[in-house]
Image 1 (cartoon, rainbow, N blue to C red):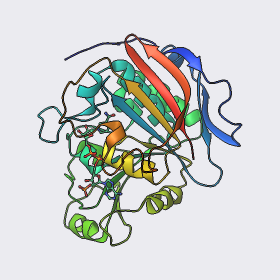
Image 2 (cartoon, protein in one colour):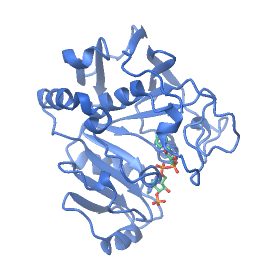
Image 3 (cartoon, helix red, strand yellow):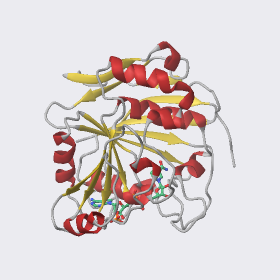
Image 4 (spheres, protein in one colour):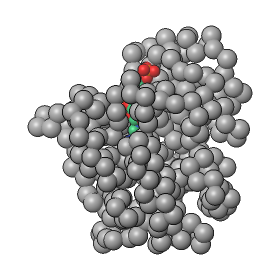
Length: 291
Ligand SMILES: NC(=O)c1ccc[n+]([C@@H]2O[C@H](COP(=O)([O-])OP(=O)(O)OC[C@H]3O[C@@H](n4cnc5c(N)ncnc54)[C@H](OP(=O)(O)O)[C@@H]3O)[C@@H](O)[C@H]2O)c1
């Protein structure tokens, strides 16, 4: 296991001079002093006036692998990042700014212990993240939305039962039926969004909007991310490039080749590089996706 970037700052290398294009409204700004020691400068995310803004966060190996096979004993994002503390800090920062975190059920099924809060990723800075959210007028933790067509979830998962974290299971009618037979925590609600085999991107946006959220963070996995990209719902991508080479051709989640997405068929998306940071051998890229 590679363990790099422990305690390193995410040093700014380059920032696009032109962006953001004067958003009417934005989230974030200059970081509080404690957090700024790890992330100098500011982190500001423009908010869409007409719908919730959706940003995504991924970590990839140098050869473009974001997930190993579902039957791998070690299939989590941590293996992809080499359990990088700097990557966890980046994830925590984005969670700290988000009203909602959205993940697919495949990501939830990888483990049983993860909790989708900033504090879970950076317990040493939990108070600083909480204070920043409070200063920004945000609730203590983002709402977690889990996308599942089947409703096949372990409802005892720590992330579905974390105190103070509202959870919405966004599912189909069949998924809701399955979930109705399972014990759900008091903070968990089920949203049956249509009777199709999938929850449409538009329905997810309306669900997010219904919570009052302005900023949603999609943390994958690659299938959900691909769906949202194809539906042109992702506004920005924060991509960590980890100094690892997977060196295998059976990995399930190559970022650019998610299910159903083929370049040359009008489905590829161009993105504008907005900033570059580095922590040791890790590179942190921020892209704004063209509408
Ligand atoms: N490198 C990274 O940054 C990163 C980030 C996240 C995850 N990962 C990795 O990615 C792997 C999982 O990948 P994945 O692509 O299979 O997982 P995923 O996208 O998290 O989950 C796919 C599942 O999500 C549900 N889903 C997705 N879109 C849906 C929609 N529109 N409507 C209803 N349900 C929807 C379905 O669940 P049901 O099957 O329940 O119907 C689907 O099978 C894991 O190994 C994880 O560690 C890596």
